[in-house]
Each structure stands twice: as structure tokens, then as C-alpha cells.
Image (cartoon, rainbow, N blue to C red; front, side, top):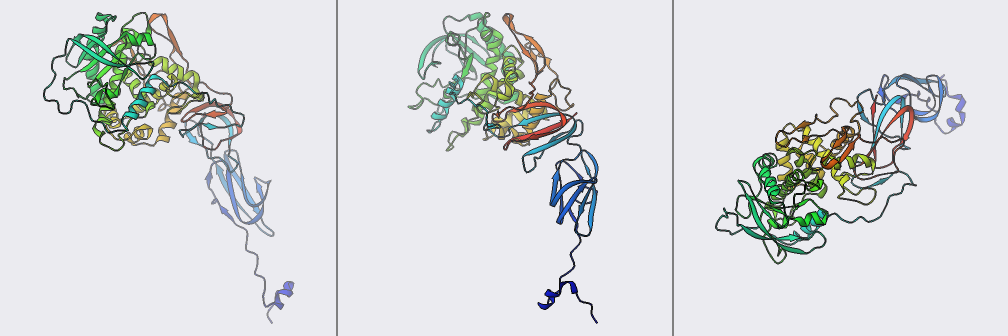
Length: 530
């Protein structure tokens, strides 16, 4: 006789017999797995969990933090149990930087130890991390450069052509007198400014408005012509020559000193043909500079020479990226933040890391730290700020130092049709998020015993200018002309993460584990084990 399932006689009446209950198994992870926190374990059916012999709850899934090292997880079913041994890795082995993945509640768990943390915003917009955070909506007046950028973008919404098209003869001799159409720094107007030729060299011709120290201005022009513009062209590419005179023109005018808005500027409209939309083009490679004044740090001869390098980079960038593509439906114009960052990098690479003011911009960035956006709006509503320029210069200096062929990288950025950080990353064969992470840590760990690869190259002294080149974010007190100084003390650490982070901004802190932290949506938390 066949033995029946007598315990389930009602089922027999329906012609069925209950199958045996399948054994409980742990379906994830595999035995011997090496995992990171938070640990997650799954079973084939609801079970009672024990971790290292201690009760850990019930259900088909268990998740939680465990100290680094081996652990035994047991799943107890109705009649049998399953177990496995797994090893929990350190959250970050000493010297290794990791991005932590939050659990379902947005939390990350750090085990015992000392950890450096960066909370970073990889996106372009501000992320509010706390409900109580105060993010100012106060409008900030646009800088002169931002206004000029807006004018250029508006001009290029209508078809334009380069200046000089159809010119039959080259202008090899610079006229002794010339009247320039100079944009006003206080409004959208233009002022005719008569000027006198004070220098004519191989690559540069310089003019000065009355009231300018002619001897000092001529020396600035000579230095730029003979030593610095050739160097800059080797790095960034050749300047254009829309007026066929073979030279870049410098105009020294005390109007910039009086306005105290800009030390110098380049107006892209001057490379475009004069037209109804662009009636005041000077149709020349023209850089505007203030008048030399040894008593004003902004307008010392060294500062003006550095500014000439700065503005020449704007000229070269526009000539390579935008001028050849004027026939495009939307000619590319470099993002203002990236454009200014490269111009400050050009000052450094031309031999002016301090005397041109770069060090002051960096000091402002370091002082405000997590409030500063790399390429967007900061927490007070400012965009083209000294702090943002300092940030972008430190970012691009880092990228320059990482390239196997820096000059090729510089030219790829300026000659391509792309713009912004994506183009900067693409030229170096990298992703923006990877570049941001590298920059965040390089800046944050300066002076804090950084891993060897996370540091700027040592600073040096330029043989042509005698000025410091490169970056030392913990240089301390840096003397400037006229008895001035700035102080570089590295990136500030925080006792707690801020309530908001601007686009591409970041905050740094050091913590002692074990600790649980919440990662707000849209931000990334990276850890370095000490």
C-alpha cells in the first residue's frame, strides 16, 4: 500500500497532496563574498536573521552596516537554516579615494577610523541640502566682462563676417595717429579716443591716449612683443590678422584707471566687419589696457603686462573657436567661466602667477570655499566673481599639469567647436565628473598630507619675469607690490556640511568613525581613509 499524506486529508478530497517545503537558501551574496557597506543579504523565503550569532530581524532581506572583516550571516527557516561567511571591506583603505553609495534611506555608514570626506555637487545648479538652508536670491550686478560677453552673444545672433574680407593690401606700417572706438565701461555707449603710436615691434604696435606714462607703456608693449606674445602663441596658437598688419594692437587709456572696473579687456566685435549691427568695430586685433601707474597695484607695469597676456588669450580663443564658424547657425562662443579661467592660466604660463593678480583671485576662492561655484552662480547670486575666477584657474591649472602634451590640449580646447567643461574634459579624453573629483581632492588636501598624485606641481620662478608661476595653496603670506599682501591657507574644512552647495562646488571635512551620514539627492560623497 502506498503511504499517503494523512496530515493533509482535506487536500486528498480535492485530489491533491502538498509538496515538501523547499529548503531555505541565501541567494545573495555568494559564500566568501567581499562586500562594502551597507551589506545586503537576500534569502529565498522569509527567515529569522542572525549576524555573528546576534538577532538581526526577520524577512527575506537584511541590510545594514558591519565593521570591516569576516562575518557569519545565518538565515533560520521553519525547520532548517542556511549560513555563509562574508568579508566586509574597509570603507576606504588608507590612501584610496572612493565614492560611497547611499542605502535606500540615503545614508552611508563609516566604520571606525579617520576619514577625509568631500561632499561634491557634480551638476551645474545649486543643491539645497537642508530645509533650513538660506540661499540668497539677491541679484548681483553683472561684471563688465559679463556685460561684454552678453553684447557679443547678442551680436552673433545676426549674421556677421570677419573684418578685413576683401582687403587688397597689407598695412605693414602703423599710422602715427589713430582714433579708436572705445566701449564705455559705465554704459553701452562708445567713445572715440584719439591716440598716438608709442611702440611698433615685430608682433605688437602700441598706442596711448593723452595722460598716459608713455615710457612705461612702451616698455610694457616691448616686453609683451619680444618675450611674452611669442610664448603665448606657441602654447595657445597664432593670433588672427583680420587687418593684415601682422601685429596685435595695444591701446593704453587712463579711462580704465578712472573707472576702476577692469584693468584691460578684449572686445570680440573688433574682429568682425563694421556693419549696421556692429558700427563701432575697430576691425583689428586690439587689446585695451589701463595706463601704467606704479602706485596702483592693479595698473603697475607688471600687472598690465600680465593683463595683455590675459586678454591675448581671449583674442586667440575667439579667433580659433568662433571666427572661422561665423557662418554657422549658432557660432560657438566659449562659456564665460571657462574663458576667464583660461585667460588667468595664460597669465601664469606667461610668467605672472602673482604680479598679475592671480594669487589674489585664488585667495578669495579659498576664503569662501563651499560658497563658490566653478562655472555657475554662487550662493549670493554672483556669477563672474573673483572667487569663481580663482576656482576655475585652479581647476584648469590642474588639468594643464595632468596632460602628457599640454600645448596640444590647450589648442584642442580652443580650436574645437565645443564649449564649457564638457569640451575641456573631451580634449583630455576624460569625463567631467572624474576631473571634478580630482580637482576637489587636489584642492582640499593641499597642506593636509595628500597622496602623491593629488598635488599641484612645485612652483617656480619665471626666467623672463622673475615672478612665481604655478600654484601653492598653502603658501601663507604672499607679498605684493605697494606693501600689499594676500594669504593662502588652503581650502577650509567644515565641522558640518553646509546647507547648500553651488554648481560644481564642494565641501571638505574630516570625521572619526563609526558614523552614519546622509547624502542629499543630487550630491556625491567621497571618502579617503587615513
